[in-house]
Image 1 (cartoon, rainbow, N blue to C red):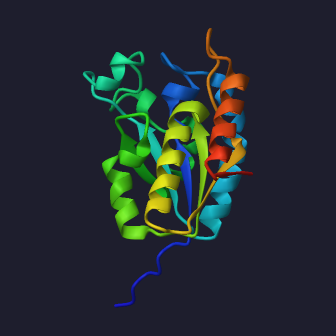
Image 2: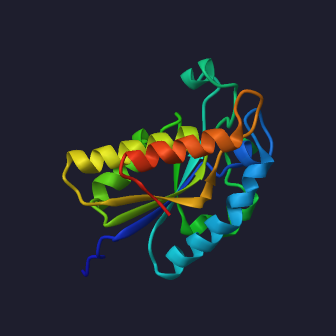
Length: 189
């Protein structure tokens, strides 16, 4: 039996679910502005037969995270499902549910990591730049450094965004997160 070669690149889409881009306690429909860039990039990866992994924020009603954030993206609800614009591609994606802000620690990602790393490049898109994207990217970069894997971790600048609420100015938090990521050796493209 012929074995499949390991992938060289991975596209990660963080939390482009209805609960963040359509409706819910943490939703900001303006995040939809990054969807065309995410879809364009996703189509490039899929056409090249390269993997695309999408994190789905999906919590139980008693999730510890709700001590910090309002109840959102309950598993099994519309909020925890892929945003409508991504649904036509759902069967081509590696879907990973996560129960915290950091998808790096999700069981499905850890299994993917074990089976497929090191990769030459991981490109990250999605929301929220200053929370879930930031934590995942920093954890991944740190893990690669710890293992001396020359994996190039990058963020698609036009493919990430965060929410706008009183006390959380979208532009300020997005720019600050991108600056932190760049300072950690993650390329912003």
